[in-house]
Image (cartoon, rainbow, N blue to C red; front, side, top):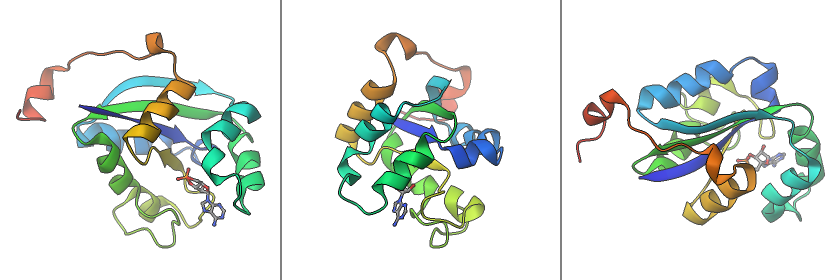
Length: 150
Ligand code: CMP
């Protein structure tokens, strides 16, 4: 089992798309093991996007991610990190394939609705940045035996 961090960005919040997008992850079979609404601090966003510090879009990205509340989720499932990245599609909604979340809902490279961890190390770092251990819940759902065979 793998865990990945998802952020519903301020554009998804303002466009009232969180429910529809979260439904896609649920329908895929992924389990929600953490979920919360928060107004992120600048410091938190700067830490989260530290790898992009030298990029020309960094300052506007921090502005964007602190412009309003976000919803954070930790999703769990076999191969969850790659599964979710594939479901999101390319960073730029204009290039994302139809059928992906960004391909279906987005037209922009900054306003791309959802962030998801891009690898196991990043996922661990990002989950620890936004969630305390006691905010994550391990549990089984009745249909799980029909979602994953082994
Ligand atoms: P995300 O996957 O969260 O990782 C970094 C974010 O920076 C990205 O989604 C976009 O929101 C934003 N981003 C990436 N590339 C660009 C770009 N060229 N111009 C503006 N914003 C960008």
